[in-house]
Image 1 (cartoon, one colour):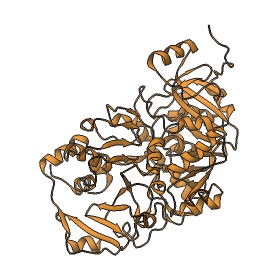
Image 2 (cartoon, chains in turn orange, purple):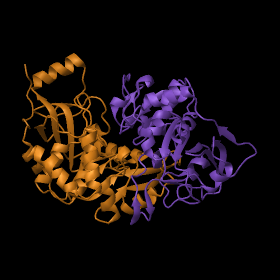
Image 3 (cartoon, chains in turn orange, green):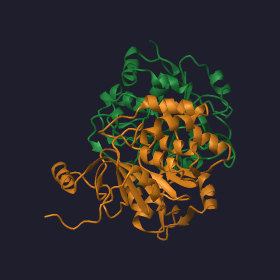
Image 4 (cartoon, helix red, strand yellow):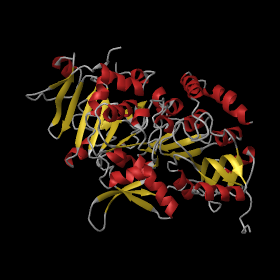
Length: 281
Length: 248
């Protein structure tokens, strides 16, 4: 017998853009060249979403595309990189020209902020960081504060909770209700799902709840998202291209390098229009 | 094929891996990945291999470098996946033994800059960001920084303190710098030259830095790599991605 379930949340890629409003703070799944929700990003760009704030630990391709297309007004990240290829080309140029507000963070603090957001507490203390000039930057921004452990007196950094308006998360498998499984590396995606006010999943595979039940039973898979968090589900096989999805496809390094070269030469918009927007239009 | 300075950097960085260590590498970390492979395969060190890619304890003999060191396919046959969240929690508990960081600038106090050249507000060059550097500098038992041996990189004072060497050294934690010329230890008394690469005279090494480096009574020479050593490194990087990092 199937127990009662929340409503189905399957929507189209075009409808997914409506979950995000101009001015929202968003976060995306994955890291540099892995499990970026690029189809959802293309949908936001096609819908003309703008003035978005972006927060993530170590973004790469997805962030650079959004900056190149003028969708963001601010970025908060511990690192933005194209790794072997070089600095994140559009992020670098926009930051140097003052076109985006860039708040550099550090991994442990981003994780702590998302943890606080996920747990419903206003801040999270974190060790390390003391002595870095980032402390002054964040105290001025109102995102960190140096506090004393009330028990030992140790100086710690209190990181204000990070609660993005929307998390865009690409997963391998979801049912229509937003119960979903991330296989392989999970990064902070489970915290992002719990910390965000709204969650849009794009999934390589959308299965029935009975099929998901069988998969979790037979393979011992754990749910990374449940229907309690998920606002919408979009079925998008290949929806992280050119970034890779563990167990499904490797990063398309040739395409990533081609984008990097185009962005360095100032033609990122053309590359995105021809390769990403057209693919998902 | 003969070894190049990049290969000597790999050897230099591998020397800090000790039996029983929990060793972690981050993104854009080709040389640390190769150093870990060399430590496991050539030096026979038995340590726990982990990284930002999240495979836990992969088979070091099957590690092959890719353009992203966050690529889980680069580190095959792990026991399973273990998140970076978990690894950084271990660091906070003082249980991460060795981590590697690149640096655009490193100064006499051991501070590293990965944030900006020029001012933070209007950078002349916006760097990628320090990733975990700020967080981990006061926490990890041994940190090895790798950098180009140039006056604009080895500086008296960094433009921005991303990771605080000063705080790290105050806590008694070890900090080393492997350049493409030499091994330098950062101490509370300043940088100390510990070894130079074969073929690079002291004078050139010292003059290629704008930071003041103390030369102690004994400075080692890191000898050229044997064919066996180079073979191990090349097997983990058959396409020579490491030479595109710009270290020679």
